[in-house]
Image (cartoon, rainbow, N blue to C red; front, top):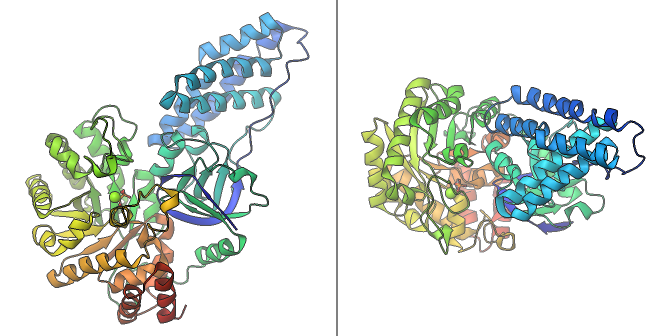
Length: 546
Ligand code: PEP
Ligand code: MG
């Protein structure tokens, strides 16, 4: 087993077999010189057009970010500057067409790399276009994602946007790249698709006989262990019976709902059997937007997510901008410590009119769809903040207002907060980060961000207790909810809904249906009194007999 650390750029855990993305073709040779340079030069444009055509066709089958990325890549392939420079290189230096395309594209990508930052990450896009045109000129299959015949973790040196744009989330469990950065398209799309992703995992391509992996998109850790993966894949393949109704064996309801960031996610969640949406991360719709989207644009985007869940519960979270999810149109400037800075609801205090417009759009989308919409604020610290938010939600004509519990102060004030809102949902990703003072993106601190940490479970218990006392719903929408063993513990702690990535829905639903609530309450007691996460897991296994 080996454990490697990269940068987690898209939340969630997954395990499964690894499928490698083929490296680009080798550098094309500069010889032999073409006997007819004009005819050789004339091959460049049709090859580029064929590549663009295929990308446009793929774009026509998808929408949203994926469509935009594929169309942009297609446009790059037929960039007149790229084509004419390659043609000139054939004519002036008597290069074979593939070599000319190679050199022309490298000129562009070198310039982008030299510009640094965001521009440098676009260099990979130009190289992708280059490799596709070269493969076309050689009459070979384009490099990139292999045909997947089973759900797999994709492993690549780096992924081009066109590789990731129309990935099927049902077949791709996670993305791992040896290179890449947190603002690359790979990262943005992985987040939008709800696929866990870790980039910059140095050395992962060199691991011998790598056939399976466990990927943690929050801590950035990638473990390779054939044995463990085999067990988890088997669990995933045979989740047991789940009748689609979220409840314990004795019928105590615990809704099994999904985390989504786009219309495609919502459709996947519906197909997976989710009973609703527990967290719609609206900021995922706008990670690449330079300007605030209009109310109409927002309304359409939200309506697309709500559409599959007409008459079902959907929790829409208002923009959670800041820290690891900056939005260009809500720029807080440089902060020395962004995770502790102006983020989440704090941004709405600075721009209340942006919140107002978003609430108007959500209310419009709710009316369009017929879904049972609730609205929830991210990063709430105090009762006053919760009350401020609830007042605005109600003023916008929306019937239910809730807040996330992801700051320890909010967990400790859960009863008072529940007094002024209709529900709360625990964001265990951030709650763990703030309880343990451990950056959720830092691989080296992954053990502190383990949701089985008894200190975290004790805070969740405080919130669950407040919910029971006041008879108000308490959800969990952090990654903890997708762990089938922990799901029962959370139910035992008083949690009334579990929201997770679509892939986890049937597995968690089945795990919850295995035992009555009383057994889960005993499991929760055992976990709470354990001194360490390992002992908590072992104690719960002992109670549940698994
Ligand atoms: C969380 O913090 O647990 C959560 C669900 O919100 P996000 O992961 O979007 O910060
Ligand atoms: Mg959070």
